[in-house]
Image (cartoon, rainbow, N blue to C red; front, side):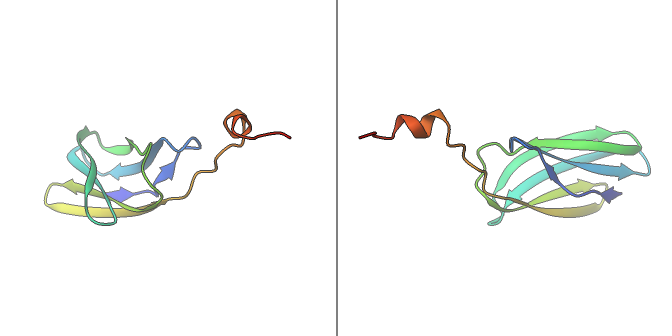
Length: 100
C-alpha cells in the first residue's frame, strides 16, 4: 500500500489523500491531533487500485495532524498540517467600524 500527500481543499473544510492498493482491503482511518486525540475515525472496504479517502477538517485549529491507516497487520502514518485560514475583510469587518 502506498499513501499520497494529504491535500486540503481551498475552502479548508475537507482533506483527502490517495491510497494505492495492490489488492482489495479493509482499512481503518484514524486522524489524530498533535496530542494524539482522535478527531476522525472511519472504516473503508476498498478495491485494488488508487482510491481517494476524504475526511472533514472544518473548524479544526491550525497545527499538525496525523492520518493513521490500519490494514491487515500493518499501520502507515501520513502527517499533515493545517495552516491559518485567511479571514476576509468583507461586510463583517465593515459592520464593526465606526466612521467619523
